[in-house]
Amino acid sequence: MRMVFSNVEHILPINEALLDMVKERIDTWSDTQVIGDIFVKFVCFYFSFFIIISLKFNYLNIILMIIK
Image: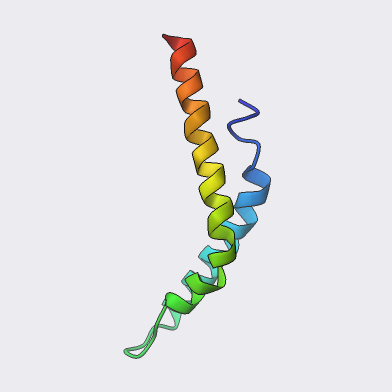
């Protein structure tokens, strides 16, 4: 279980920051409002998320093999 949830402390603050920015934008939404710039600010984290998610699928496959 430790392997599956080992990166939560790194991922959670990033997700919380993204959520806060999106919520703030939605709260002040107008006809000319855009949201893409928020996601552009987080591009540098996407590769890290991809690696973490890939590892999680590998762990899941190992767990499924053990269960069988």
